[in-house]
Image (cartoon, rainbow, N blue to C red; front, side):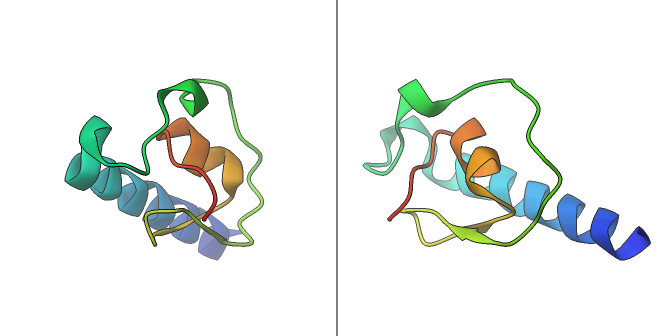
Length: 68
């Protein structure tokens, strides 16, 4: 259980860094994907079009990042 929490927090941190690094000007950013809905806690890994691995597609979408 603790390892899942650590991994989830790591992916959230990476997601925030990626969002801050690229922001809305990045060609990979899609404002229509951004949402505040809760995502599942499954963390199979999802590579966004920005090359960053997010916990899952929902977490990437919350940052406005789509699939490759």
